Image 1 (spheres, rainbow, N blue to C red):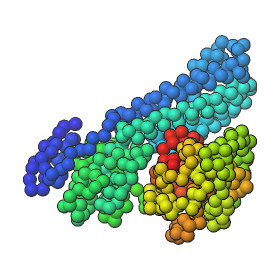
Image 2: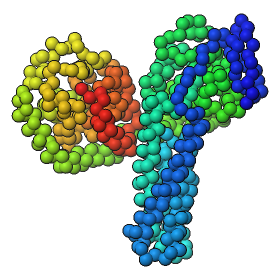
Image 3: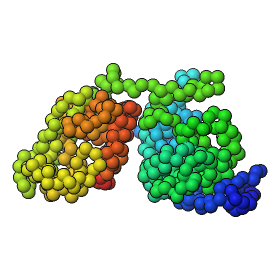
Length: 508
C-alpha cells in the first residue's frame, strides 16, 4: 500500500495516510494515532481461530480414545481404531464448522459460540444415527454415544478457558479492536469512557469523527475524549491514519441510510468492520431479529419472557439448587455460625434485615452477622464517610465490622444463609441485588422494573465489580438482567461468581 502526502494548507495538516487510490485531507493539528498493545486484529483473530481448530482436533482425539476404552472396548478391530483416532477428529471439526463455530462474529463474547458447538454436535449425532441405520451397523451408534458427549463437554470448557485468556489480555489493553467512533460529542465521550472502563468488550477507541458544527472541533480536548480526526466526510481518511479496523456509528440524525451506505462503500476495500449502534439499551441479541422489508432492515424486539413456564422452571431450579447447596455445605454453615457467635464481640450468629422482593413484597433476609451488635445505632457516626454514590451505604474500612465479619465479607461467606431465603421462595440464586425499603422509596419509575423478578444471591452486579460499582452502573446491570433473563444466563453468572469471589475485589 503506497503512502500519499497530504499538502499543508489553511485547513489541512501535512501527514502521511496509507491509500491505494485517493488523496484524502484531514484537519490541521491532527493528533497522533493512539497506540494500543498487541498485533493487528486480522493477525490475532486468525491465530486465535487456528488455535481453536488445533484444540478441537486434540479434543477429537481424546474423545476417540475415550470411546475406544470405555464403550467400544479394547478388542475393536484395528481398522476401526484407526478410523476413530484419525477420522473422527476431522469429522468433529467439520461438524462444528458447519455449525458456524469458527466464524469471528460468534467468537470472543456472548453465548453464540457455545450454541454453534452444540448445533454441530447435534448435527453429527443425527448424521451418524441415520448412517448407522442405513448401513445397518451398531458400531457407529455405540461409538457416538460416548465420543460426542465427551468432545462436546471438553470443547466447551476448553473454548471457555481460551476466551478467558483473551479477555484477560483485553483487560491489559492488548488485542483490542482499534475503533473510530462516529457521532455527536457527548455520546462519543460517554461511550469512550465506558469502553475504557469496561475493556472486556474488546473495543479500544483510537479516535472519533464528529459533525462539522460540533463545538469540540474548536474546544480544548475534554477529559476522557478521544482524538478528533475531523468530520463525517473524513471517516475513511481517519481510519487509515489511525490504523483503525472498526468504525462504530452512534445514533445520529445526520447519518441517514444513503450516507451510511456510501460510508460502507468507502470502508469495504480495507475490510473495515462497520458497526451501527442501536438506540435500544441493554437488549440481548436473543430478543432481536432483523427482517428486511423492501430493502429496509427492520429490527423486531421481543418482550422479555418473565412469566409462564419460564418462571416455573426458574423457581424449581432455584429451590432445588438451594436445597442441595444447604445439604452439601451444612458443616460449613455450622462452623461459621459457631465462629460468629463465640468469636470477638459475641452476640447472635445470624443477622436479619428487611429487604424488598418481587412485586414490592418485603421479607427478612438471612445473613451471618458481620458487624457489632450496636452497628445500627452507630450508623449516624459514620454516615458522612459513605463511599457509595447512591442510596446504599458502603465503606471500605467500616469500624463497625468485626474481625470475623471482615473475613466473611471478603469471601462473601456471610451471604450463604440466603440459601434459606431461596428455599422459602423469597429470593433466587441469580437476580438483582435485594434492595432496602429506603432504597426502593427513592426509586424513579423506570428503576422499579427491577422488582418484577425475585432478587438474587448473586447477579451481574456481583460478577462485574460488586461494591466497586457506581450506583448508576449497578442499577443498569440489574435492569439488563431483568430484560434478558434466561437459564443459560443464570448458569453463566453462577460460574462467574466463583471467580469473582476468588478475586475478592469489591468485597467490603
